[in-house]
Amino acid sequence: MADTIHELTGLKDATVGLERLNAGTAIALKEAGLNVVDAQQPVEMARAIKSPEEMKCVIASLRATEIGVGKLREAIRPGLTEAELWSVLHKSIIAQNGDYVETRLLNAGARTNPWFQETSDNVIGPNELIALDTDVVGCHGYYADFSRTFHSGPDRPTDIQRELYKVAYEQVHYNMGILKPGMSFREYADRAWNIPDRYYANRYYLSAHGCGMTGEYPYLYHHGDFPDAGYDGVVEPGMTLCVESYIGEDGAKEGVKLEQQVLITETGIETLSRFPFEAHLLT
Image 1: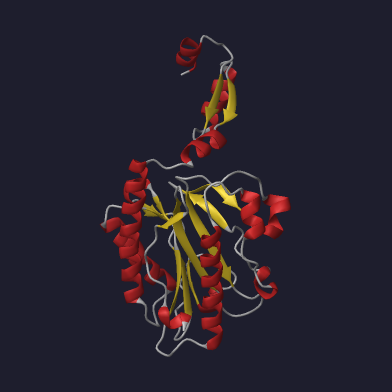
Image 2 (image 1 turned 90 degrees about the horizontal axis):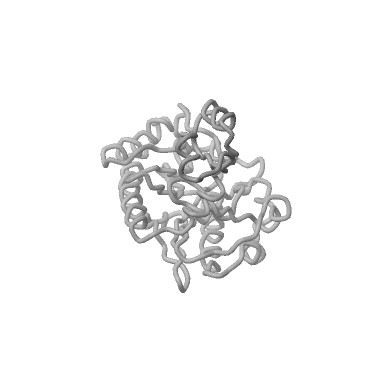
């Protein structure tokens, strides 16, 4: 490989960006005189704007994932474990020739708060919230990333459950409403929905993020996190973004996870994820 690079560039100390090679290969290339650097940044920047052909793959992955989430929703009943319910989605994805589910983020009841607890053998009880983040590497290797929260029944959701859901729904749709091409990441952070104090501690760590073959550039941070974690850039047509919300009070029993995947267009956004929200949690 080093000989080929030397021949192509005419340089003995050519700079080579490596994204995914093992450590031994990187060390050997460096010992051969090459200047080895991390290729993640230029590769992610190149991937940020989706071509029309890529969008066909994104849409195919989303439609297959929505079928899987529909089957999962139909299968919900108290007495199943989280893992049993999550497997309904995974089975459907594989049956439709998708690749795999990158995470195991389905939780019920008290395990919905805080977020980011891995799916387990916890048994789903009656009248509990069930939160799901799809994170599907689906058809053609493209990512389908939307989140929904369900209710296990059989009774009507409580006032607290419906309030959590309505607040999360408001956050997602408000932030979708301000997204536009040409907006800077800092402007987005400044204009984004203000998370109420009682939910702030358990907020999702991002307000929105890029999405292609996984979660990727750009990462859009909340206003309060921007000074420490944020960076500036510009929202551009052709970016696919996932707008996030997690609403759960610190120390409370349950929380709600919602997320929508959108395409930035020349004039605004196009909503890509079409799976419906839960009407009985919004009324």
